[in-house]
Image (cartoon, rainbow over all chains, first blue to last red; front, side, top):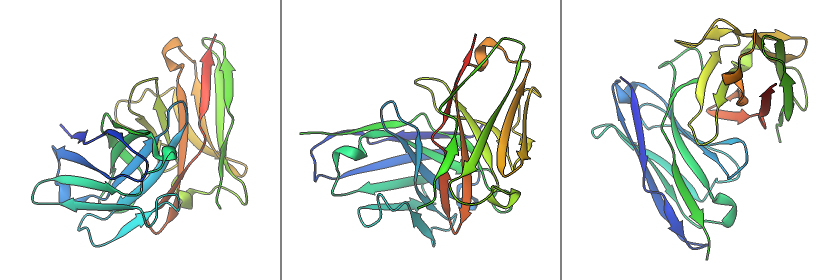
Amino acid sequence: EVQLLESGGGLVQPGGSLRLSCAASGFTFSSYGMSWVRQAPGKGLEWVSEISGSGGSTYYADSVKGRFTISRDNSKNTLYLQMNSLRAEDTAAYYCAKRGQPSGFVYFDCWGQGTLVTVSS
Amino acid sequence: QTVVTQEPSFSVSPGGTVTLTCGLSSGSVSTGYYPSWYQQTPGQAPRTLIYNTNTRSSGVPDRFSGSILGNKAALTITGAQADDESDYYCVLYMGSGIWVFGGGTKLTVL
């Protein structure tokens, strides 16, 4: 069974940093691109960042470019999101999501339960 | 700035049919954007419904179907049930690792 389990959320002051983790199991982690998707309270889903299976390619939404860094450790089956210079508008539940196929059709087929990040003084 | 548009809300009667759409602020949605659809109930993670425009994810009832209607992607629910009352999101793949979600549609079944 494919499982994704996020951790690392919490309360952080504006300008602070936080690192999120997503532990994956039940599939060949290194074969799949992975994304972070966030959802501010009462708002819709927003794609944040994606990383290729090898980790060699990374992509970011304009809203986080230059502040967030996505990475992965395929030996530990774990995805990360390093978040720096946090702003109040970064407050959200952060989900990790797995691409549905190693290549070809492009979609998310599995989501974690989310971890809440609150940026407030 | 690419904006993906969805109806903010929709209402359907139990047993009825509803079509939710997913468009682009500029241009047409085609299969090349690999439109996919996700269902989310409050406090829960999204659930994958449809991918590659019209392929149902494993375990999704066949009352859910996807298509391209005109210049938009569409999600049709035929024979709506009470537990279909959820938020529905589409996402389009822009290429080069970039995804854009629509704002979501809140579906009420009453």
